[in-house]
Amino acid sequence: MKKRILKKRMKSLKYEDEIMKMILEKYHQSESGIIMIYRNDIVNNEFDEKEAAKMISVLESSDFFTISRKSSRNDFSIPWTLQMKISGANYFVDRKTTKTAIFQSKLAIFISIIIPILIKMIDIIYNIYK
View 1 (cartoon, rainbow, N blue to C red):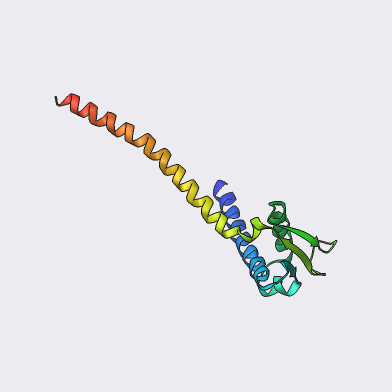
View 2: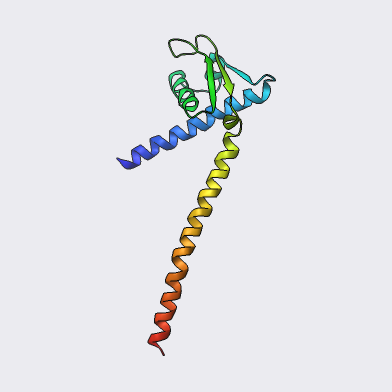
């Protein structure tokens, strides 16, 4: 059961990355910072329209951009207009920085636990053979 949930979450993260990659490409192409997402953009990138709409809404709730205009039916019958925020423009940079910081903190915790254990083991072994 947990594997299925984990697989679904990993698929969701991959889908989120692909959608954000498409949005960032359009953002870098626009001069005004306003992004228009058309139905063709979704179809050409082989996204499911409902899943893409859901993922874009999730990304908006994560405060990466604001949706200025969208269809009332939550589909792409009219182009969606997005306004990118700074956190969205730095999406992949921030994720890499966060991963590095998490790794460094885990490493520091690991070292702070292992070194005293090793010192204690060496002390015990030394006292046994003394």
